[in-house]
Image 1: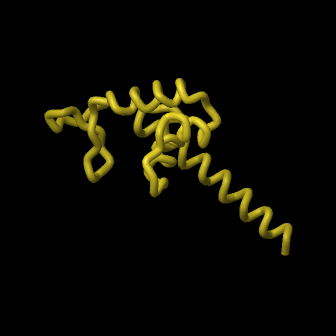
Image 2: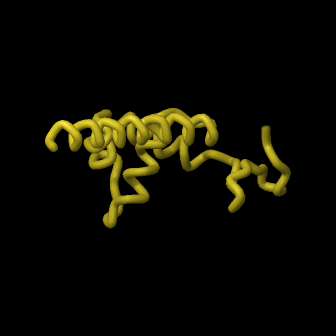
Image 3: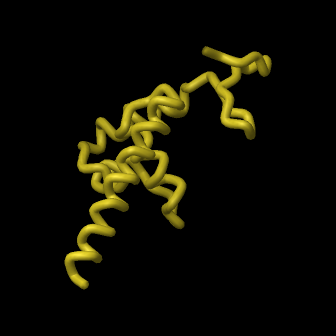
Length: 92
């Protein structure tokens, strides 16, 4: 039974990594950016750079740069998951 649970947990972790990689590719960002977005969305509290950095295992200065970079992204995303410019035109 313990072996089956271990295998199931391993499969879950691998699937999560694959999902993060696919999402990063789709959004045109890095894996750390995806992990940061996951932490920010999942947290019931507002996260500052120090706490976000702690959760991601990066320095708070790096977390500040990461948040600034994500905040400057000019593209938005449609409900269909298509990246668009401010005028609604699809981006490549």
